[in-house]
Amino acid sequence: AQKITQTQPGMFVQEKEAVTLDCTYDTSDQSYGLFWYKQPSSGEMIFLIYQGSYDEQNATEGRYSLNFQKARKSANLVISASQLGDSAMYFCAMRSNFGNEKLTFGTGTRLTIIP
Amino acid sequence: ETGVTQSPTHLIKTRGQQVTLRCSSQSGHNTVSWYQQALGQGPQFIFQYYREEENGRGNFPPRFSGLQFPNYSSELNVNALELDDSALYLCASSLVDRALEQYFGPGTRLTVT
Image (cartoon, rainbow over all chains, first blue to last red; front, side, top):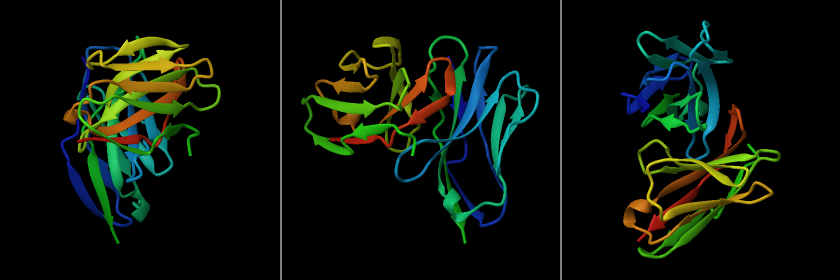
């Protein structure tokens, strides 16, 4: 079974500052993928970034980077230079590379950017 | 926008009724997954369809059923609605083995009274 834990229900960050959203995971699979999604109030899940379990380098996508520490089973999302539009729910998710492609999500972190 | 559409946007039903939710996949995508997101929670996997066959199911009772059509659009049917079925229902489409390109629709918010 897979499990994602997000321990920060909510965070407030000043505009233009960097923010780290925590995510730890648990799985017995050797090959898996880790994802971060953004969910604005409209409800749609927006893909942000992906990290494969065998990727040696941390993934980066523009202002988003994933701090992957495999031994600690953590996959924290770092947003640099936060913007007002970053205010949303953020979900960490994982998928096994075997079987179907279901995503297992955490409970999310509500990020609020303060002007 | 992802190209995945869902209908209706909102729906109110009474306990015991049946409901059908619809999803139109991104063009060319042959796999659709359905998720239930209760208020304040992360999405929970309901099931996935690939080429009109169920391809995995989460921990949901049989009264949750689905269909995928030849044009890859999909339906989620829920019978004997319960109050706890109130949630946002999300569908996501992708090409098999290319889950990085899994695109979510805007969801259908179901309220059961």
